[in-house]
Image 1 (cartoon, rainbow over the protein chains, first blue to last red):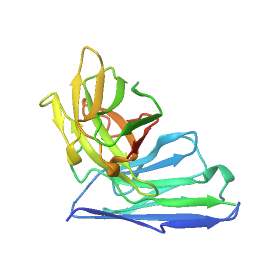
Image 2: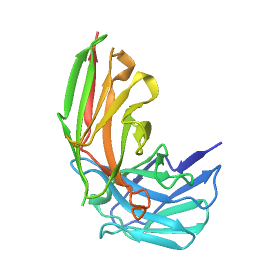
Image 3: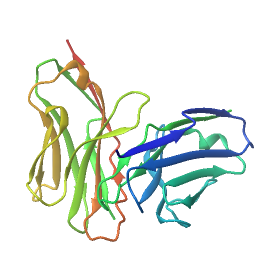
Image 4: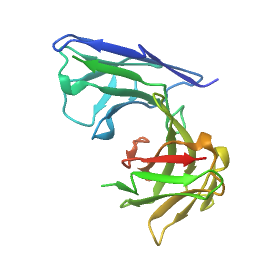
Length: 112
Length: 116
C-alpha cells in the first residue's frame, strides 16, 4: 500500500541546535517528494521538492535544507535552528501520479 | 503565477444544514484543483480533485465540488453537515501544463464548525 512515514512526530529544540526530519514513502518508485511547512499566519508553504535522487529544488530562501539520499527517502535539515523555524512540517508524495499530492501525518517542531 | 482565495476563514453551520465553502483561483494555464481536509494535529487528507474530466467532482465523506471556469471557482459543498465534518479545509491549485511537478498553491484555509 502507499504510505508516507514521518518522524519524529514532535520535536522541541533549542535555538541554534541542528535539525533532522525524516520522511520515507512506500508503495511507489521514483515519486516526486515535497516538504511543506504550516506556520501560524503563513499558511501552507512549499519549502522543497524533489523529482529524483539528489535533485532538490528550493522554493523559498531559508535556514533549512533538504536531501534525497534514496529514491523513497526525503530529509529536512538545519544546521542552526531559529525561532522562526517553528511550525508543522509536512512531507508529501505524488506516488508517481505527477498531479495529485498526498500528505504524511506531519512533524511538530517547536524551537525554544 | 497562481493564487487561491478562500472566502471566509470561519464558517459555522448546524448539524444537517448545507455546507458551502468558497474557493476562487487564479491561474494563467488550465488548473488542477484540490480540496484537502485537516483535523487537529494531523496531516492533510485529500477530499477531492479536479483534473480536467467532469466539472462536478465527488469526493469522500459526501463532499462534492464544481469547477466553474467562467467564475474561476471551485466551491466545496455537502448537503447535510455532520459533527465529524468539523475541521479545517484547504483549497489548492496546481498547473496542468506539466512543468509544475505537482506543486500546490494553497488558500488560507476555512475552519468549519458544526453545531448540534
